[in-house]
Image (cartoon, rainbow, N blue to C red; front, side, top):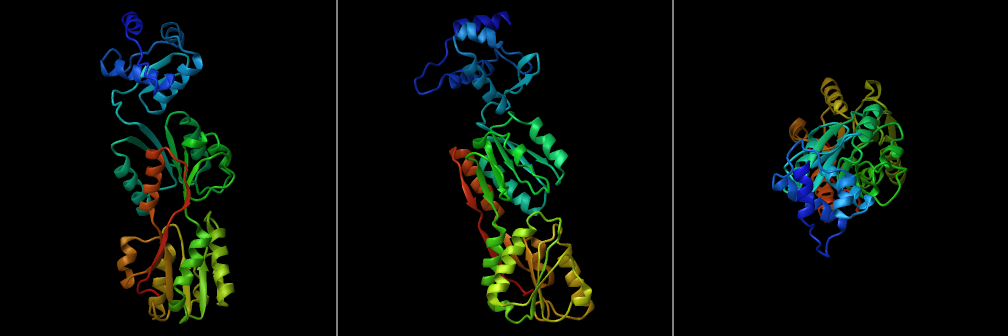
Length: 343
């Protein structure tokens, strides 16, 4: 460490008036890494050494060091100090992306994030699979390690206290408008109640040929209550006979029914198509089907399934905008209706 201490004494910080002191410190440490005076695995000077040589307060030093930790450039090892973690120091942001699962919709979101941020950020992706313990562990273990935290929740438990541990400006909630959060954080969400109501209004003429509208709402779906409220609003205003079921019931499956499904793995769509074939009822004439979230399969299955689908690429663009522009954004993500043969 002796040669490095001499370097600290002899090499002044960039005292540009446009940069805060902690930013001058981060630039200085990065310059030591770029010049190979600090290499991967090397321990950087202690807080005491920095205080003595650079005449900065402990608070300023910690702010600068924590920023480098968040960017993944250095790491803090308990009771040992700070060590150089990487020489890849050209990305401005390090993103913690926590999703419930990976599917085609999440892939669209992730793909757009990578496309928009590839020159500016490293993205680490994690999954909680609707498991609170896994969610809690991932959040707590990664506090302070990233510049931004992009998170989809969808858990039955109240995760707001965990999310509130993340600094508000670094917290970006996606897909579900999680309740109970504090501060000025960002959120790009689906408005399930609004979306189903207005989507059904758009489909009003096509729905007119059916006698009953049936919503298949599984109790384990976190957003089921919101979808139900929008569904009930439409049925009440249009005086449309309706039924809400937790699963497909063959006993009341009959000509004149139109179904709305939003099961996690589209199993309800498959069950409905099988029943229609079994009873020799034609989809789009005898039986109607509206499904949530578009996929390539739904575009061709049974000559096309009508869908209510949010734009996950637009969601990814909004998240990238928040990160790149350093802004706070709270907005409803756009949702579209794609009419096909099943209605």
